[in-house]
Length: 241
Image 1 (cartoon, rainbow, N blue to C red):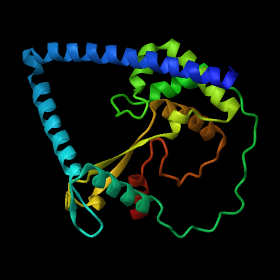
Image 2 (tube, one colour):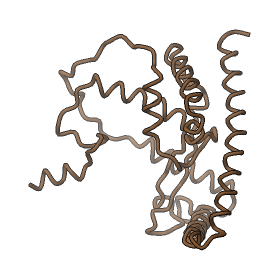
Image 3 (cartoon, rainbow, N blue to C red):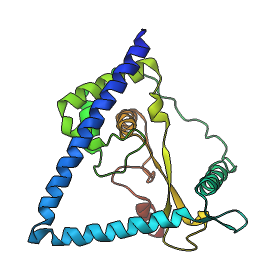
Image 4 (cartoon, one colour):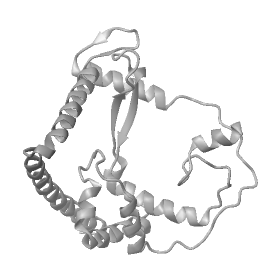
């Protein structure tokens, strides 16, 4: 068995172990939830969960019946899935006019050092909990609960990715979920926003890389989008004043 195959098998085994731990953690969380709901203070939580469950049910019902491109209602699961595939393929492959490439931008070249544990630790701390998972079913909460053991493993994994210049196949997969915008025809695809559910482990990797890039890439002061502690609202305010 070569090293690449050995690494893949090791990753698969760790993935199975993590899933078992997730199952245990979920059961523990449910037990704690039921205990809390059984108290006077848990009454508000109960109503909140009931409202959320009702909304989730509505979302599922809305997506089960949809209209095709000619406005005809389709109900079979296979036809609905085919229509969503058709809609998102057209939406995401639409040709737009590209701006001329900006000239005079300096390239950044420097030695790429190995990823350190403190980088992974910081990235893990920045990750928000309670986010939907897919396709590997490993939420970021698992890595947070495992503490230093997770930091050790993730640092090793990320350095393998860095050295091999290849990402795990699981990171290349995502699940596209249509979310209703709460306006317009519920059976029209155009009234849904597509949300991609991706691996939380891959997002951790991206945060490590992003933190490195921000240290070496010069970003002009008027840049507001995708910047920490800034928003496009700030840009609108600046333009108006």
